[in-house]
Amino acid sequence: MFQSKIAGIGHYVPSKVVSNEALTRVMDTTDEWIQERTGIQNRRYGTKHEETTATMGAAAARIACERAGTSPEEIDFIIFATLSPDYYFPGCGVLMQRELGITHKEVGALDIRNQCSGFIYALSIADQFVKTGMYKNVLVVGSEMHSMGLDFSTRGRNVTVIFGDGAGAAVVQPTNEPNKGILTTKLHADGTYAEKLAFINPGCHGGYHAAKSGDTTNFGYPDPSVFGEMFITPRMIQEGMYYPNMDGQFVFKLAVQKFPEVIHEALLSAGLQVSDIDMLIPHQANLRISQFVQKQLKLRDDQVWNNIQRFGNTTAASIPIALSEAWEAGKIQAGNLVCLAAFGSGFTWASALIRW
Ligand code: UT7
Image 1 (tube, rainbow, N blue to C red):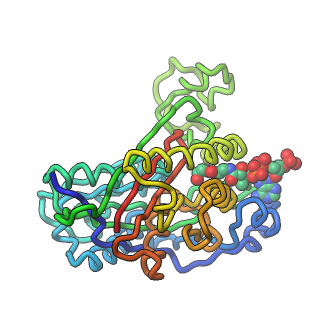
Image 2: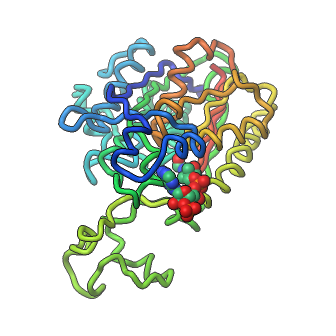
């Protein structure tokens, strides 16, 4: 068995900066509310016709490859995590492959749909493939183009003000150095509350989950026994039912519980303690959540990397963007213990410990 390590990390964020003040012009919200509840000041939005989730992923991937001393053509497996794919299918993995000009047919591409914990899930899969010797250069990407799927009316304000666009990428390679690289990953899921943070329509559910839960609105399906028009219905369009929804307080309460839990779990299995962590990179869900976790773990400000103030919540991209930024700033040095942790829609949550 090999050990696997992150050999290169990179990120890309679109150039368009969108302030809280800009959002107040289209919906009933305030800069004060957004900053107080989330810590967010600005976020980035991609430019239509110029960039997509796949192209942003490719931009981040090029940087990660360069820093890993490899070329995209040498990548033998792609793992792409996103909840905002360019197409419903095929996935962004193959679109990014095309974008990067990876033409050899030995490469495989896998899309991951685990939202906020998508990058850690993807990293864990890369780790298993590299450890077994199956692949030598795995490209792991988290990328999101949220801005093209948000409700910019006041109705969507609790979700829309939080999210931003961007991408991060890592190249995972084998290493022979002892006690180096990905030490452990912990992955969890509980679908009990799947609809608490979800993008439900359009979809192929045919009203099943809603009917089962006693929700008689039935998502605009005229009659479940009628074939056709099941993916998207006129009512969904008329009533704008095609946006993400979130029970924010419910998610918040679970997040502050699960973040510390899954971090402790990883530390325990690696025989380490909180005091061994040099840098915690929490998924950038809400600055208040990160601050709560930091306080719980008694970590100093310089041991936690937060950038949600500038980029908002970029879901699967948030951890690799933060990791890349922290590395660029010289805050992650060889030998440092880096901890990644995430919680989000599903619910799924996860952590990873990396000896850099
Ligand atoms: O990364 C994925 C995982 N996601 C998370 O971890 C998110 C976790 N949850 C949160 O971060 C917070 O719950 C939010 C930031 C989403 C919302 O903050 P909150 O303090 O939980 O607000 P709330 O949803 O309970 O709403 C409080 C009030 C409501 O008004 P009333 O009913 O008290 O009159 C909302 O309508 O704030 C109102 N509100 C807003 N007001 C101004 C909701 N969104 C906004 C807004 N601007 N953007």
